[in-house]
Length: 560
Image 1: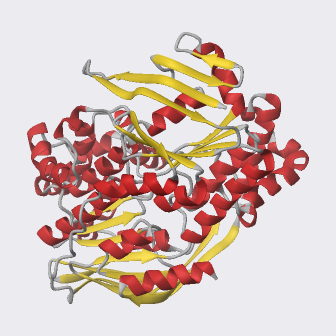
Image 2: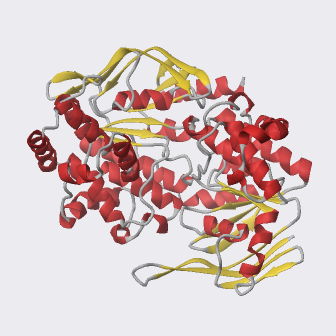
Image 3: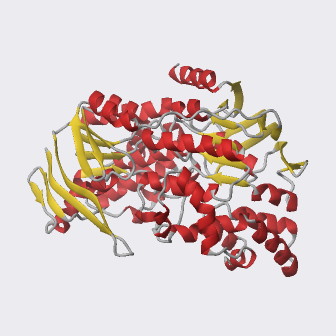
């Protein structure tokens, strides 16, 4: 049995403010129970999981697990015991080796045996651990991806690989923080069924944090509802879910705009994708569609079907093998494979939010907004062109550098270093706008996303999971892009916050006429926010049209 009594956790922020993340939390979990935890973003759920894992000290209260009685004073003594008893799958955590999927699991198995997975020499130990590693991958539905390079797996596949590494421990207590949120409905069910098998086979106690009612309803014996760091209710899944959803906003309607003029043309798009040591994995074949100005177009399909790759080609991050992508700007059609000032003009008016969005953990949000907004402003854009000419940088080279500003600063610096360019080139070409300008850009977007403006002074690491998603979204939206591309950034938002985001996107589309293209595995969200949907399967476009019909056909296809 796990017994938590009067648990309190206080975070001290850099500005000397204090946040009570957990406030007098008490509950009990029976052995071999699947215990659900729900609550809006910022309720304290992830903090509680980290404490139970042995990686986050607490300020008051007692935790009893078996014969361990843990207090704030004795927490350090029991940290390793907690880590031994538990395994955890953290929200949006993709801490993986840059090796194949099976080698990632072998690393974990070796680490469990020796205490240090970093010293694993895969060449010499592979045979010893291969069968067990493949069995674990089969359990999470990844055996067919065993030899695929982990960093280029889809977001949902990475989540399952992280889970596979945790299952290698055969833990007494399995802590799951938003499992399978970025997987397609079929793959999500496979992961959840896997967790049930582990639970039944090993009598594992499971604590599952998930905002998604369908996951909790499918998995949990009981659910604890949290709000503002406190326990508000512990009851049956049906009762807690009903109470949790009472605070949802009403659905804001999609605006009736003129959506007849094409702004993007995707013509006969074809691209073969190969993975390092993984061989050929996907062909995007003769994909054709238009995106109309002012549309909210959703692209759906199974995990690994080519959705993200299509978005990256539209944005110019990847180039097709054949076919073309053309985007209309300033009364002319521009091909996205033709580098230069025309393509830069498109990128200036485009925002891209990646599936694994990342802001710098310890930098104030306002500084990160300066980095993201500055290159999109008219003044800095013109300055960059003039400065590049002065420095002898060609328009084509400037276009490549300009594209990096759509990545996180750390990613951009890494790519610059690979081509022997100093990170300082970003500051030289794109000097930051002043703080007052940033606040003027940020204020309407923060209001639309229900984010308090004082968050601008906070560090990214200090935000809740839901706040991180919305702040990252704000950095993309603040420059008011004409085209907004969203690659599944909302998979782990609670329904209450997701409804706010859906409504905000529709309001932004209505107010600014923003063309929005998004990928999502949350079908109710797709139905609610889209004016049109496209279904992609195995690299082919198989259906497009009314979101209700296309999503229902996809759900039916997944259930076959």
